[in-house]
Amino acid sequence: MSCKRSLLLKFVAAALLGSLWSASAAPAETAAPLKIGAILAVTGPAANLGKPEANTLEMLVEQANAAGGVKGHPVTLIIKDSQGDPEKAISFAKQLIEEDQVFAIIGPSTTGETMKVKELCQQAGTLLISCAAAEAIVNPVLPYVFKTPQMDSQAVQRIYGTLKEMGITDIGVVASNTGFGKAGTAQLAKLAPTMGINILISETYEKEATDLTAVLTKLQAAKVKAVVNWSVEPVQSIVPKNMKQIGLKVPLFQSHGFGNIRYVQAAGEAAEGIIFPAGRLLIADSLPKSHPQKAVLVKYRDDYQARFKEDVSTFGGHAFDAFLLLQKAVEAAPAFDREAVRGALEGLHGVAGTAGVFSFSPTDHCGLDVTAFEMLTVKGGKFVPYKK
Image 1 (cartoon, one colour):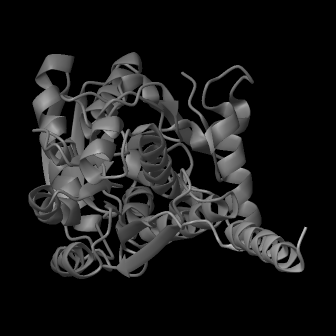
Image 2 (tube, rainbow, N blue to C red; image 1 turned 180 degrees about the horizontal axis):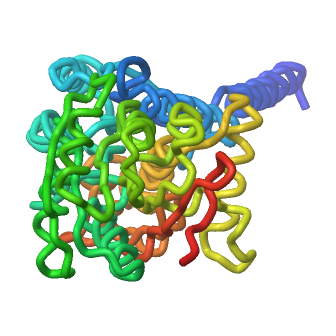
């Protein structure tokens, strides 16, 4: 072999080795990020909802990215604090859709906000997975709008069923003058005749109210046998205190918006005996190991409480479910685009979350039925399963 040919072969070999080294050393192509916007009431009157939701999403995004993202897509999270204000929610939704170009929006925390932004998301083709409860959010169905809390009509059914078991038919209703309060009041009125319940009196109050004595005195004069309160704001803790002060000694039922132990702590001893419907997150330890939600509930609760040093709430659970369902839809979708993921989300079945086991369809964007609820009560300052 000539010297020139030998040098040529060595040069070609070196070039090939260099090319192979460059290919192996070059970083793999990074998948497009999964950009999520969140409109949450982190501060303000509904902070008992929004703050645990924000905490939950931050924790889940960190966990997902540590595990390699969602189907290889790194997750970015943009949280907007709406303070529970529908007008701020509208502004933030436009910003997230038009400027940040997020893939999906989780939230808002409240019904009033969600009702203001859902049409914006639908028109833009941006997925909205609300953390608010009112049935009107998903009825009628909009293709891009979903929600994770149980239906308010289902909560009413469980409350009325429990009242009938107690032999009570004559009740009084009080509710906050908010989107959630109005939606709940409508469902209470709608279902009362069909379930044999008589609403003797129905009153509303401002969500910033600090005393409800006058309102509750009207119920007392009407000789109600039980009170149903429908709100999510801190004012709901005033209801049992004022009832005790005026001597209105009848059972108090709260909505599923009562699922944060801080409301119990704010009401103090007056909270004892309150009855309300909720998901199983608050009583996870009482579930058998075979229950389909048990493992999910316990892990989320333990992760959250270890990270944030505070009790878990059903509201943080709504954000957990929203992220979980979006993650499952991205993993199941044939392509990483909004329409493909929307279709995959609509087709999810049997997904165990904190609010229940979700099964969506083109006609059901809540995915839960009345069995997702348990009836709970307050005993010794804690949430426990209600027993007759």
